Amino acid sequence: MSPARLQLTGISKQYPAVKANDGVSLTVAPGQIHAVLGENGAGKSTLMKIIYGAVQPDAGQVQWNGQPVALKSPAQARALGISMVYQHFSLFDTLSAAENIWLGLDKGTGLAELTERISAVAQSYGLDIDPQRPVHSLSVGERQRVEIVRALLTEPKLLILDEPTSVLTPRAVDKLFVTLRQLAAQGCSILYISHKLDEIRALCDHCTVLRAGRVTGEVDPRTQSNSELSRLMIGAEPPQLQRQPSKAGALALSLRRLSLAKAEPFGSTLVDIELNLHAGEIVGVAGVSGNGQQELMAALSGEDPRGQPGSVQLFGQDIARSSPRKRRRLGLHFVPEERLGRGAVPSLSLAQNTLLTRTDSVTAWGWLRTAQVQRLAEHLIARFSVRAGGAGAAARSLSGGNLQKFIVGREIDAAPKVLIIAQPTWGVDVGAAAQIRAELLKLRDAGCAVLVLSEELDELFEISDRLVVMAQGRLSPALPVAEASRTLIGEWMSGLWNSKEGSHHAPA
Image (cartoon, rainbow, N blue to C red; front, side, top):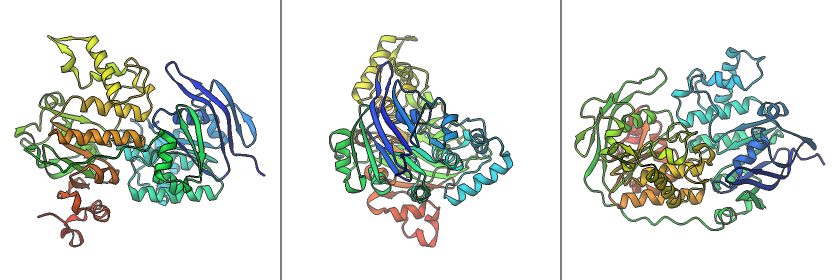
């Protein structure tokens, strides 16, 4: 028998506040698609970074093709044939997609030649990216595609994917799975981290389950139900959402023929956006990333105050050119799609990160009340079950899902009148995702108007009262979720709601 492609024995890693990995052993065979499953903070990402050479273990052994290795850097791992797609992207904002990919590849390849290869690989795998676009102009979903294409171009022997489909559309996920199965058939081993249990059962042929840094089980996920996998992962099945019919009230947020020329060469132009959002309802916005969602969010949050007067109204008041701070004081709160860098400052503590949007609640007469800042952070950690080393822990020390819970919780706890939230459960485990969605429904039931932008159709169908679709900078008519279907929403994602085929679905 050929040796295992990768074998970990007794891997341990201690951080000041938590033991991320505790005696973890893992074996990956050639051509195997091996899932690593666990709730947020279970130690999955730390383990993957050890395999990739980005983090060194405190104890344990790594074997590659039967030989012991000490992986000291990602460059050494790549030289062996190990490639990784991070959950939090490792891209330089000021460089183009092609330049970012080029940095991680053999410098014997010229940039012009690489650009052609990127386009060819992206097209063959159904991952739509423009190699010339600067990364800062890309949405989260588009950045995800850049990371995946970069990994594929290295022709890896072991490909590590950390939440690769969290912001991809169902069609893109299907295409990616075809690619991964092809790679596995060619002998490439794949380590696959996802909180989407249906994906793991459909794609993977082996699964190692982590809980609190330890291996708690190994199963063939194809023989397990979602409930069984949930019990292995979190010790229980995720709670079922208790959903009541919505009671839509007064008009809260109104968009009237909002049009904005693109602010950047590779951005999207918003064209005649019309939308009414009422108190006590959740409106979901579906669509493929890069179709104007970022521009819409900027116009609503106040980051882009170029809207024509009267085009954005909050409870009848014109806020098209108001600052984000003024909008918050009027009751509009906002959760961006990008956690690190926009939702939170990575190097600052959780307590300090509360000040990004909650300053008014912890100041008096112009003075910052530091004890109250600390108490607010501790309250958020407790209320939203955030696993962190206390209020003083740096944002970047949290797992992606726990940081997401903290950021979402910070805005929900402010008791907003209108909440605008993008990708609310990106990279969040099933239990935490259920918790966040339940909190959004509680907000709605308390009279808050909620606008959710998500590429998770299942999520939108689960919590939305009405759905709209964004395509090519335009917004579709609103449709009660009971009248929508995944097929119809898929058609509308191509901008077909005004076509002969789609127009009869539009509400009167």
